[in-house]
Amino acid sequence: MKKSRGWLLRWIWRGVAIFFALLFLYQVWLFAHICWWVKFNPSSSAFMETRLEIMQDKNPDAALQHQWVPYAKISNNLKRALIAAEDASFVDHEGFDWEGIQKAYKKNLKKGKIVAGGSTISQQLAKNLFLSTKRTPWRKLEEAAITLMLEAVMDKQRIFEIYLNVIEWGNGVFGAEAAARHYYQVSAAQLSADQAAKLAAMVPNPRYYDKHREARGLLLKTDIIMARMNDAEIP
Figure 1 (cartoon, rainbow, N blue to C red):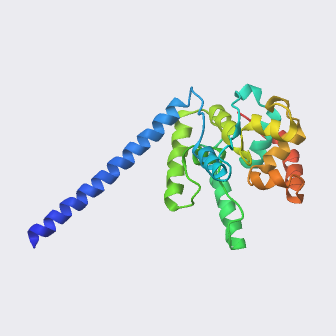
Figure 2: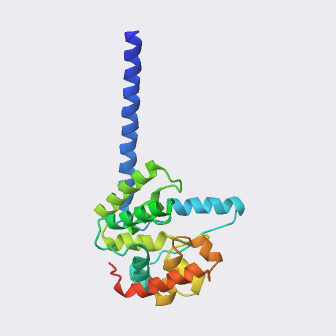
Figure 3: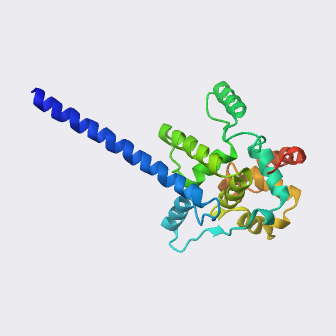
């Protein structure tokens, strides 16, 4: 009996050791990608690949609208609008906006459901680049770990440049250049302040707003972002 129990414990410990070894290797794999992307642009993201699969289930010929453009060729209007809308303290924090998280928690607690999020631009990028759309405690922990890696290896401008090029802006529309052309038939460099504010207002629910471009909530949020843009600090 003792022999059998000892054998079982050994196998349990081996299983635990293997699990942590694989977890460590996965973190190394993530970190290696992030280091590579300091100098080289990601051609896709986990979220883009997921959306493409969903689209191709309905239409095998479906393709994403996406074109990478360098930071300098994206309108400062859009940069200010996104900072104002998504993460006002982006240039100052180290990946997490603790004050914003606390405010979101209190707001959600008061409403009894999730109505606000405290995710920073760095956290949103971590999710988009690597993670599935399923909300699990494991995913939140992994998101935090990736956010720390991004902030440790990249400067704010590079994080923001990648974010601007990979976030979703409509059904199959990804990145600032594709969004500018999809909605306004101009390049990302030519976006006006009001166009940029409206694009920033779309970010939380882009597929819905792609179909409902004059939604009352979208227009109200656009006006709020416009009022805040001049105070937004961009990297």
